Length: 65
Image (cartoon, rainbow, N blue to C red; front, side):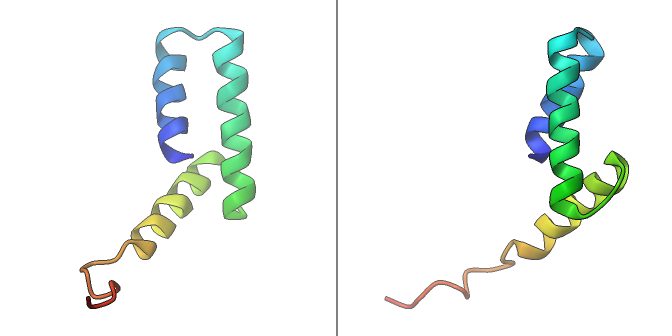
């Protein structure tokens, strides 16, 4: 969702048409719902924080073979 938001935001900055604006609004809403926030800035911050906390720092999670 973050990548989609960033892509749409870049397109919106260049094109600013109704279709891109609506898609950006939809992704913004979804990010807010998914992160339990009410505005896109807070949603982006929360989503980035969640991603950072879910990425393994090493391969210790892999089963030994």
